[in-house]
Length: 316
View 1: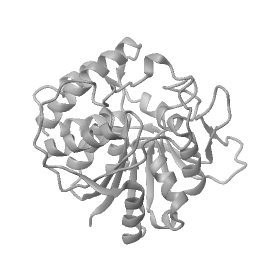
View 2: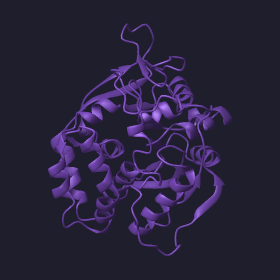
View 3: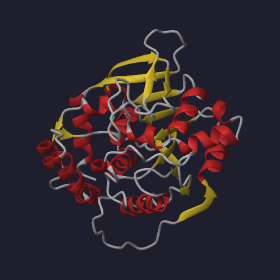
């Protein structure tokens, strides 16, 4: 039986890794759509990057839709660390030169937010949305279509944090910081339908840079593409003091495919700080258990099993 999926992304490099997982490691997954959102790069580049990867994969039957071109409220860039601006490159793919490909994959005309509603209405309770970027499209669907939250099966989200450790500001993870109002809406209105993979859990996955380098050797065409676009980013992360390859969106995709990756998780109530001078976009966990849980928070994953899945991708 097919697992129906919509991928909502801001197609940077880790989004491309996630797409590779979902295309190749579970043939029961049926990707109904890719909805594009502003984030790692502008939405025009997000569309181009998704289409390019689909062309390389020979999967042009998967439709790509244009979504939100900005976050819900303006003025969200004042405290971003300069060293972390456009972390995946201005174009989201490391700003490397890639060969032109025939225009066999084309963007669809319909709007991504409308498609989220249309597909979840058609397949009520059957579609999982895998969210690899800011949550603007999902928040707009919730605000525009009253039955969307009833119709969607669940959301797998890479975003936020649970100990206040940030990667775009001192206290906030990028996806939630880029549109904190959207994250607030989604966490508030989709209670008990959210699986959240936070930044700290991604950091805990110990995949050394050397292991990543060996993984990329003698791979297929998709691995070769990933090697090329990721090379400047690996260099950048090592210069910033990271000691191992960081798994984020691709780890979320792996978890969706294989729940055995989850070694520790817990049900908690989570919301997002919107007004803090230094903490805007930070996830706030109800450690006092005053409120009912609204998400499943993943706090530990099986690194060895994750590496096994990565090795399986090597041939693609």
